[in-house]
Length: 219
Image 1 (tube, rainbow, N blue to C red):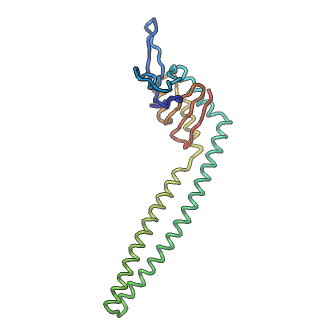
Image 2: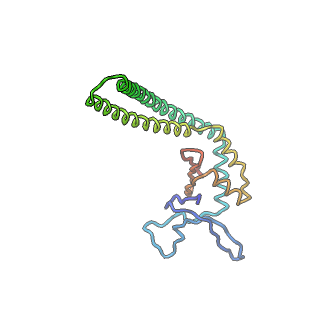
Image 3: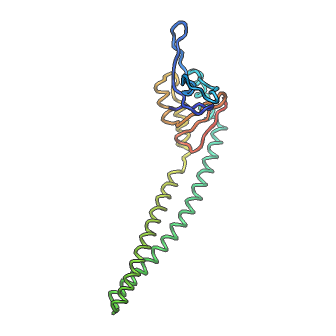
């Protein structure tokens, strides 16, 4: 379900009606408006939009998103997004380095206590005290290792959040090249690139699979 009604936020689904000549008229209908016998406090004002009109708006929107002015706007947003990612990665890297220093210190202390147990001549009480300290160090070391693994995972996640302007341009070009006269392949192509489109009377709001923010098209 790609389309969402901008008036009531219900899904918009394909439907059709027959004219006097028994010719099908295809349109997208707000699922809320199609619930017969149910009264809502605020009736949906959008109700339905013709398939032809929706296709035209889609094609026009994609064309606008690939104009030089809009491309520059998207490129600027991508650059800012990637700068923020790099800043967050730098913070994570500093945290990882702090944890690695802790890890090295714990291992050093651990080895000293182990060496002392091997080489030293301690009483049973003293050996018990050293073993207790080793258990504490082992626990602290496990906690640091867990934190390091988590930070490493976050670092990988941040790296995957980086955006490639080249790939995004290619995605828009692929959308632009879709044949809107072939309804099945056109719909498949849209679903591969677009998560959701909120439909208003004079505006479309696109959520793309390859962008972390929405794009608006007035029209």
